[in-house]
Amino acid sequence: LVLASIGTFGYLHFTKNQTPEICVSDKETGNKDKKSVLDFFKKTPQKIRTNVAIFGVDKDEIRTDVIIIATFNNETKKIDLVSIPRDTRVFLTEGTLADMRSRMSYVPDTVKINEVHAYAGKEKANQYSVQEVERLLGIQIDYFIKMNLEGFRKIVDQMGGVEIDLPRNFYYVDRSGGLYIDLKAGPQTLNGDQAEQLVRWRKNKDGSGYGDLGRIQTQQLFLKAFAKKALSPKNILNAPAIIKTIFEYVETDIYLDDALKYVK
Image (cartoon, rainbow, N blue to C red; front, top):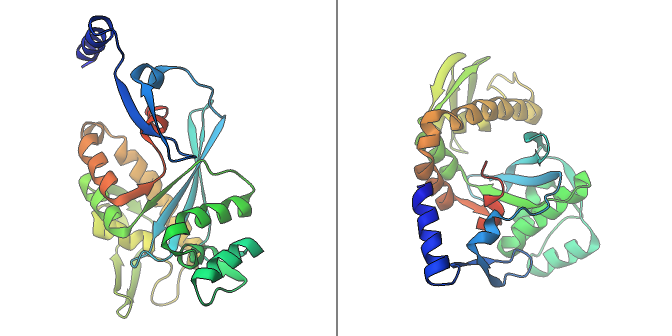
């Protein structure tokens, strides 16, 4: 592949006396500029930290019931994850309120952070969700990634399931909400449907559990197991199929030239 790439580039550059061009979108303006293939390999200054907001929307894709901030340190090459409880209260600015109320009959002055996505409307759901995370934490979000439950299930299945050792039984049934959770303690491999059960769990039917904070702890437990499986040799080879699934179900503002910087 390396030799073929070098040969192709050499032919285009020296024989045709031109460099192939690729159209990429400018994130800020939405304009498309032509960039040389060489531009992707130039060393450009990178921030020490890159912050990515990860949103998991609920079954109806109305609220962001999972909010995780992933921070990549370009010097240490490590990723830190911070979860924001979905019921965190935020006070909306006058400008945000006025804009939301111009398109929706009722928007309260203060909302739960997972409701921002709903009150913002389809056009500005991502923009305002990112904005309120930035205001809450006092940081700049560089990119966002949003995934629905169907995409989550399919990606877990595409990876061949996730091996995990559950510390307890997880049981909850909400027939009206269509939620059925029944997982036993111990080592096991979760498929997509079971993984969804685990990350949506907050408490058992008998009331045991820790609500949203317990839910966050469980999600972080799953994420560690998910990362281990995703980076296994088998799934590195399976990457093209996984990436294809991701692009079908994930909404993001990360462009090709941005992504290439972080491939390694």
